[in-house]
Amino acid sequence: MATQKLTPVYRTRLGKLYEADCLSVLPRIKSDSVDAVFADPPFNLKKHYGRKVSDDLASEEYLRWCEAWLGHCVRVLKPGGSLFLYNLPKWNIPLGAFLSSRGLDFRHWIAVEQKSSLPIKGRLYPAHYSLLYYTKGKPSRFQNIRTPIEQCRHCKGEIKDYGGHRGAMNPKGVNLKDVWTDIPPVRHRKFKSEKRAANALSTKILERVIELSTLPGDLVLDPFGGSGTTFAVCEERHRHWIGIEVESTAAIVDRLNGAVAAHRNDDYVERRAAKASGS
Image (cartoon, rainbow, N blue to C red):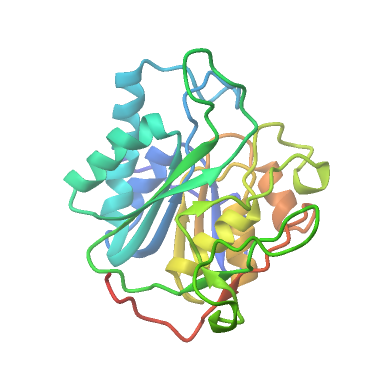
């Protein structure tokens, strides 16, 4: 383990942001100390994130790198804590197997619909990213989330795929599914910092992840801070956080200072549920 002192480049009352390689910060985090981990690493698609990141590794090398930082994420996660891994299905299949081999319990493969990619000859049109949801044993946190009944964007009538009788529906909405078709793309400049050209995640994804798996006062770790979506949501939802980003953190600071807008979210969180059923 390195002995050089690491100092956060930015602090709030709730969080600390480090501008460093995650493999230099993660070993310093105490074991069994984090309530939830959200990781959105580079997808190895040959994108340019900056001079400190290579997004063009051999498959074996990419998987070894992911297993290195994931191993630390498993270590720092509290018993009962949750780990979310956002990546391409191609990578999340072997990485999910790795998490299972490290003793984590599989909860869900969440399909997050994204139609921004181009069709690939000889293959089905890739229209979703994978969000793996694992826990370290029986989850200690699980808050039920309800989403509004979907409506036709033309006639505004309800899309009646909820089953049962309309009068028996919960007025707060339907239970959150493991297929998310309502995540808006991050394209408009008001949702992105001018200091970061790379892709950004919708705040709606992180709001669901954080509300689902943590309570106010819990600690969330994100080793790939990107544009800072995780940390902004933690601030708004009163969670403590540890953030790491190897490239410039200027876009993150912009977001934390209110320069980037959040997407609308009509989810309803049943906050009375503080313990999970383990189902």
